[in-house]
Amino acid sequence: MANETVFERYAGNPVVIASAVPRANSIHNPAIVKRGEGDYAGVFRVDEISMDFVLHVGFSRDGIHWDIDPEPARIESDDPDVFVSNFSYDPRLTLLEGTYYLTWCNAGPQGPKIGLATTKDFKTFTQGEDLLPPANRNCVVFPRKINGKYAIFHRPSDRGHTPFGDIFYATSPDFVHWGAHRFVFGPMGGWQSLKTGPGPAPIETDEGWLLIYHGVWRSCNGYLYYIGGALLDLDKPWEVLYRTKDYLLAPTETYERVGDVPNVCFPSAAVMEPDDTLRLYYGCADTCVSMAEAKLSDVVQFIKTHSF
Ligand code: BMA
Image 1 (cartoon, rainbow, N blue to C red):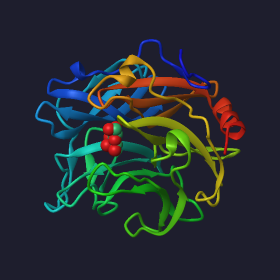
Image 2: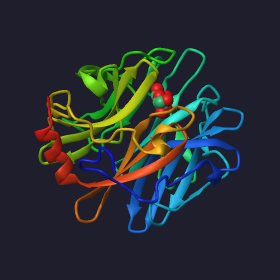
Image 3: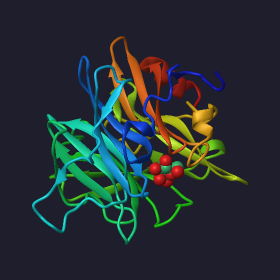
């Protein structure tokens, strides 16, 4: 297949399409975790036939065939001032200290902001205060504390189709107060020359934190979304060790090129499988969900040998 270097697309892509949910116009950009053999759970972005953006939970035994709840996820708070917006999109999930942390873009009239909820069973989610105020569109939680603090990558933005995108690192002692923001990296030449943003939860490797991210190139016809990877220092994750100059995946298949927003590969979930296999889930053309696999060691090696 065109442009495959390390990741090999699943031959049955796309794995989830809009017909999985009665009210869906499209389903894409999912957060997915593997809870054990034969037990996958996810939170999917569903753009409804009203074009409200809502989150739906799904379950799967093989990570390929999914049952998506026809009703939106039950994300609840005792505080009426803490609520899920009807413009909720791009969830990310991280298992941290035995609890799943869900972050998503909980956009409001003041712009995109980062929502936060936790769950242990994916049946109900307890919503907390928004993790970050406007304008911020991407946030993912690290799977462990770093130097005694909780840690995130996030991506400040504007209210619109943000023509910039730099990834920042921040920490918190209590998951409430976030600070010590450090610039990690931003746009560089080629396919990532307009903006960048963090994808799935960082994966700890011997060579540093693996961050799979999206990079955007602006052509005369609009934005194109690509998938890249970076290795970041384990103790100082704002320090970039290596970062792909060549992309890991680009929109070339019909289901990546054609849809509500054409030419989009948007990485949002990564699952480790037996035999060092990394399974990457990504949204395609803001319309459906696809999957690609690679050996984790090959991804790390590719990033090291195809870096700036
Ligand atoms: C980004 C996000 C994603 C989307 C992408 C392409 O800004 O909104 O949800 O997949 O644009 O439209």
